[in-house]
Amino acid sequence: MRDEIYPFVVKPLPYEYDALTPVLDATTLMFHHDKHYKTYVDNLNSVLADHPQLQKMSLKELLTNTENLPAAARTPIINNGGGVFNHELYFDAMKCPVGQEPSGELLKALERDFGSVIQWKEKMKQAAVSKFGSGWAWLLTDENGILTIQQTANQDVPDLTVYTPIFLVDVWEHAYYLQYQNRRPEYVDGWFQLINWKKAARRYEEVIARKQ
Ligand code: MN
Image (cartoon, rainbow, N blue to C red; front, side, top):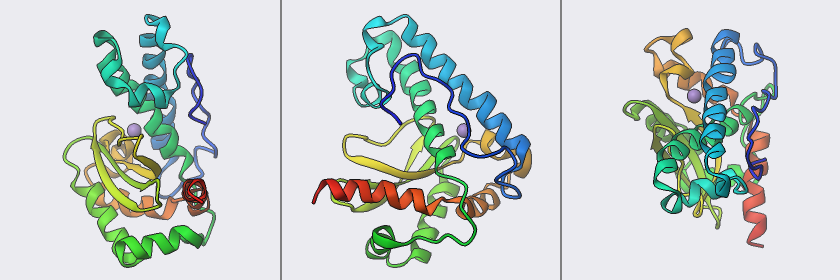
């Protein structure tokens, strides 16, 4: 899904606006997707419109070669390209079918790398709640299937030459403020219920399959 090139398009939500209630209400989700995420797409296209030599690069290529980008384009691409990359995975990784839990190789890896699913959840929540200001908390895997939790600031992405994201939680206030105001921990608790573990397992298994 991230091999597209300029002009980037706004991807529709893979579910209805009210599909994540009561954790995320339709208004919160609509503003987040139709306004915030769309703005990143529009701004990224607008930067790339002035730089034809970058128009054949995928989003991942743009975000992993930032030191080689023209100086005038570098910061806008980090901010808006990251905004596109991060939001597309955030929306795609939510909507848990009822009763879904971690399973298979991903479950084994969570238990191996964090002790238990409960301990993983505590660390993930801590990363999300403690991120100062705007940013994200991620569950990542390296090419050997070792899981790690990271925080990034603003719309920064992790080192995508080293890590493949499994999923992430948006802790910018725009992700939750309409519904939760300042209660970020409550939003994060709800977000855990939205994790689409089936899709997460597929992302993880794709990475470990490459090593076999
Ligand atoms: Mn956001």
